Amino acid sequence: MEDSNQTAENGFILLGLSTIPNLQAIFFSLFLSMYVVTLVGNTLLIVAVRLNTQLQTPMYFFLCNLAFIDICFSTTVVPQLLANTLNKDVNISLLACATQMLIGLVLGSTECLLLAVMSFDRYAAICKPLHYNVIMRKKLCISLATGCWAVCIINSFAHVILTFKLTFCGSHHINHFSCEMPPFFRIACTDTWLNEIAMFVSALIIVTCSFLLTLISYIHIIKTIVKIRSTDRRHKVFSTCASHLTVVSLYYTTIMSIYLRPHSAYYPETDKDVTLLYNTVTPMLNPIVYSIRNKPVKGTIKRIFIRKIFR
Image (tube, rainbow, N blue to C red):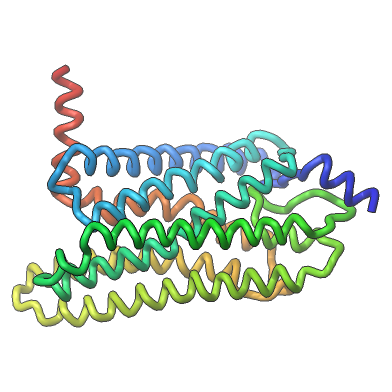
């Protein structure tokens, strides 16, 4: 009990990705570059939507929410990751760790639900174009976004409370680069069955249901695309939807591989690599795949830089 109390008081030590110096330098440069691209890409999207009234539609309303989540998600994890690559071990206090876990859970789960809502928005726009403005009215969009945030905040608080009610004994070294739930189950000296069941049920409801709703929406979208007579237009819409679905699938599958499996199947080194995909890669790709390639967004961004240059 004394060891467990000392662990709680002193916090935890995050072991990071690698202790090999050459790899640490590569990791630092790589993740810093990805972080900068994530911040710039998502910030430009939000600014473009704010400045161009033509972009203030339901689709871009949800995209701005997604961009905000991606900025915060990366900022919650990547600075800690960069600190881990520069230092041998990084000590993090109990409060800081709990806060990071809470914010990460809120943002990660909210993104899952928001991606499902965005797929429904694309379904309404492509499959029901004449009724789109009636279906995706402003009040509904705000309610959907608010609902996503509210559900995920309540859910995440419950998980963090359950996690830090566990007793941690012996070593307080966390074999990870950030505070995630599964690594904490490994160092707990009390039974974690309740935590694992809660995590599994939560992931099953939020992640799996969101993924299925997204998949169903895109199946209907693809059916509608096939009926388009113009080959060029059909190819353009299909390529856009395919890129969307690829990024969405990458995010959902990596989340499910971490949170939808038994405690015995936890592999620290593999899980760190998988976690990197939804913590760093997806937030970087989202603004590029969803919006930066769009002509209205690119036009607005170009005008912003032209004004800056002439000023």
